[in-house]
Length: 260
Image (tube, rainbow, N blue to C red; front, side, top):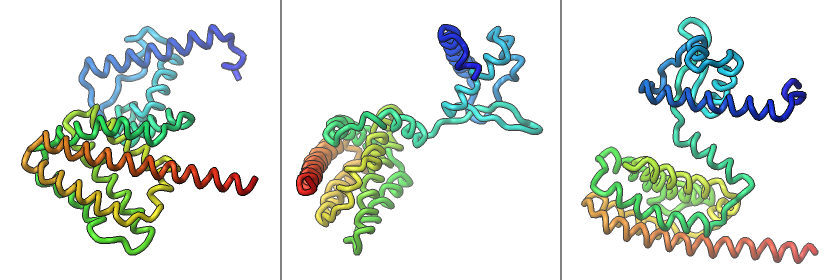
């Protein structure tokens, strides 16, 4: 209630002050080389360092907590500790941006067609035996024809998992995060879930065809071939998904017309 009664210029000033202190704390974390699990300086030290009131420091820490950068532990040995934002949390935050700006399948695949070939090229010759074992585990989920609709859906998700593992193994963290995020969008979009739910037995063979070829050149370290195979795979996947999206949209339009 106090904030609602405060003049707007004052509220804006407080927000800017909180954001400034939050950024200064991040700068301090970087300058001191602090790592996840380490404790931040005590509240009093932060107040003195940034010449800020207790309330301003607490608001700044609250902002960092909401961003997932810190956590508070009470009791003996308690305090404010740094936490690492994992890929899944980062992608969840990014997904919120698209809550009211839902991209089309074409939007997503336009970017996938550019990035995933580079992702494949970046890991060629860089993967360990354990990395290949992770990729092979995802492929085992769809190495046999599905017996039920639920199994087919699980296999479609496992096909995406193959790409997600590649994204996690990418030596370029920016490229890996962006590719992983695009795969997250495909999992979450309603129209994509409907497409994945639709029976399409030949898709399993198509995915295996590309991925077996890709695994071979990744092991040999042929980055150019990996890029080419993934580019073919993305174009084929885009064409199928766009056709299915149009088909589903057409069915809904016909259903609406019948009801009208």
